[in-house]
Image (tube, rainbow, N blue to C red):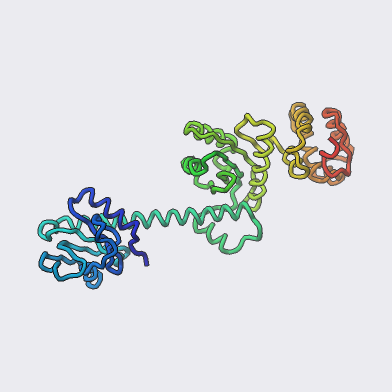
Length: 357
């Protein structure tokens, strides 16, 4: 059962007293004054409210009656209903014959304010639960339980849509979150984390890069300086934690390699990200020159893909060739080509490309 709180009671008092020229009191389910334009009456038992709570109907107090009732003054008192239950009492101070006509309007206003606050609370609670679903998607520390799927169903989240993780960093995460909410599609998910606002962008609505570009423009127009990074597109919810980690690593690497940029995409930084994950790339700036040379030469990204798979397979030539669907000799040719472009030797069976750069 929900009841009127002190915060809500005072809000009812403040709003109604702006239009009604008399004191307003709001009493809780125990008949205690928890909101009033007269601070001296706060926390007193209101005898008239107790009678309203008992009868379920309005109760008027004349001047003569007020002298014999505890904590009461002349006025009219009305029950505040929510879902058919009395949740509190609202009272107007004054001679009943003078304020009686305003009483019903004040009661209606009190009920509307109460319903509004309950709705806001429910929306905020749903937002928190929805963000918890996103947190679980990003962490995936253990297999998803039935509660996770129940929550996803409750919020009509289609877990089997392709999505990509986007990270937005700025000085004021709360302001970023407000703006992000204005520019999301129905199937997008979002959450605020310590490292920024994370958006699980549905790729149905267009590419992550075009969305990020528009979002960055909106943030900049609002006076916010931000950076954005995107991971890779994942076919369903099971790979979103991978995309999120890729976005985090891409942001870290991209910010070091190209600090002037505002958007970094994992597809453009695959090798630096892999090197960072395996061997602390951020501390080895000498690699930047070699990587940039390879990227500039390899317009079709064939050599970059080869090197990426080669690193992922820890220098195992046979497994790398199988994964690339190429002959072993073709792999050797491409590795030689990479060596020729970068001027650095790549030895098979090495743990990482970094060891021989």
